[in-house]
Image (cartoon, rainbow, N blue to C red; front, side, top):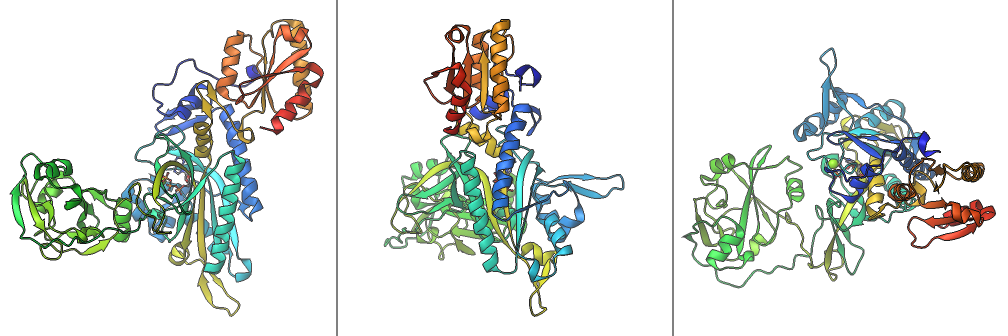
Length: 573
Ligand code: ATP
Ligand code: MG
C-alpha cells in the first residue's frame, strides 16, 4: 500500500482528551477518531489491526470447535423479558433501548445469551446434536456509566462472543476448558501474556467464571488482581478471599457508652479523636437496595467489597444511600450511622466484625459515637459473610501459606459458567437417549477485540510511538525512501516495493514528498514492526537500512538481499 493512497492522518500534537499512552497514540498515529463519548471510527490502519486480531481469534475459536455465525444487533424486548434480564438490565441502565414506529420496545445487543438460546432451542432437540459452541464477532452496544480510555471502555465496541451448549455439567466443563485453551493461545498469538483469574459472575448469572487479564502498572488496568506468592491462586479483587486469621480478643466486654465526637465523621478523624486503632472501629455504610436499606459493617481498616455484598444479597442491585436516605434511616447525618437500635434495615456484617470487642461505632446521632459496643449484645446482625476487600500481604485462602499481592490488569476476555439459567428460563431443552427432556447446560465466553488491540498498544509502546507485535500490526514493514522526489531513486524504491508485493510481504510505502525527519517520525509513531529506510547515499553504495521498530540498532543490507533479509528479520519478530 502506498501511503498517499490510504488515509493515515497523523497529528503533531497530543490529543487533549486522552489520558492513557495507548489512547493518545492511537489518535495521534491516525488509527482512531472519536465521534461521540465512547464511540470511535476505526481508520484504515486500525481496521487492518482489527481484521488481524479478529482473524487470529477466529482461527483459535475454530481450532477448538467453535462455529461462527452472526446474530442481529437489534433485539425485540420480548426475548430479554423471557430471561428476566429486561428488568435487571433496566436497573443498571446499561442497555441502549429504543422504540420502533409501532412503539414496540427494542434494545441494541450488548451480549447475546438470549438470542443464541432462542436460536438453539428452535433447532436442537436431541442429545445427538450436542455439544455445540457457537460464536460471532460483532459490534456491541452498552451505555457504560463511564466510557473512557478510547477503545478500552467504549459504548460501541467489537466483541467476540461464544456460547456453549452441553447435555450435562461434565460436558460443560469440557467446553469451558476448550475455550480456556483457545483464549490463552489467541492472546499469545497477539503477543500478549495473560493471567487467568477467578471472577465474579455479576449480571451474567450462573456460577464460576474467569477473566483473562493483561497485567499493566498504570490506570489502564481497571481491575485489581490478587495473586499468591506461593501458589497459583489468582482472583479479581471483586472475588478474592484471604484466610481469616483475625482473632477474637480476650478483652472483657465493657459497658457501652455514648461519647461526643465533634467534627469527626471519617474513620481517620474518629480514631484519632478517640485514640483507638482503626481495627477497633466498625464502620457502617448504608446502601439503598431493591428491597430496602442495607447497613454493611466492616472493620475500620477494611474496605467494603460491593460485589461480594450484592452477591450475599442474591445479586440485589445496590446503590450507596444518599444523604436523605441516611437521614431517614438513622435520624442522623452521613458519618454517624451505626447498627445499634436501627430498625427496618438489614444488617450485613463482615466475618471479622463479630470478633471486634468493645468496638467504636456510629451512634445515629450527629457528632456522636458509641464506645464499647459488642455485636450480639448491643446490636443485631442479620447476615455474617465475607464482604470486604482483601489487602496486600494477607494469607492466601488457597494454600494457607503464601502472601497475597496485587497487580493491575486490563480484562481482555472472560469465560462464564452459565449453568441452566437461560436454558431453564427460556426452555432450551434436549431429549436424552431415554426420551427425557433436560435443559441444556451453557457457558458464555467473551473477548474484547477492540480492547485487546488497545491493550497491546498500552503494553508495547515507547516515547516515539507504538511498537506493534508483528501478528497484529497493520503492515509488516514500512519502506521509508528519503529522496522519493528524485526519479532515479524513485525507480529503485518502486522496484523493491513491487518485489515485496510479489513475495507477499505486507508493506506500506511512504511515498509522500515529506522531509526525511517527518517520515522517520511517522514511521516510529505508527509502529510498523520493521522499517526499510532507503537514502540516496547508501543506495549509491548499493545498500538499504533495515531496522526493527523495537531495536536500537539498524542493519545495512545489500540491495539484492534486502527483501530476503527483511523476510528473515520479520520471521524473528
Ligand atoms: P468490564 O468488567 O470491563 O465491564 P464485562 O464484565 O462487562 O467487562 P463482558 O460483558 O463479559 O465484560 O464482555 C466480554 C469482553 O468484552 C470483556 O472481557 C472486555 O474485553 C470486552 N468489553 C466489555 N465491555 C467493554 C467496553 N465497554 N468497551 C470495550 N470492550 C469491552
Ligand atoms: Mg461491563
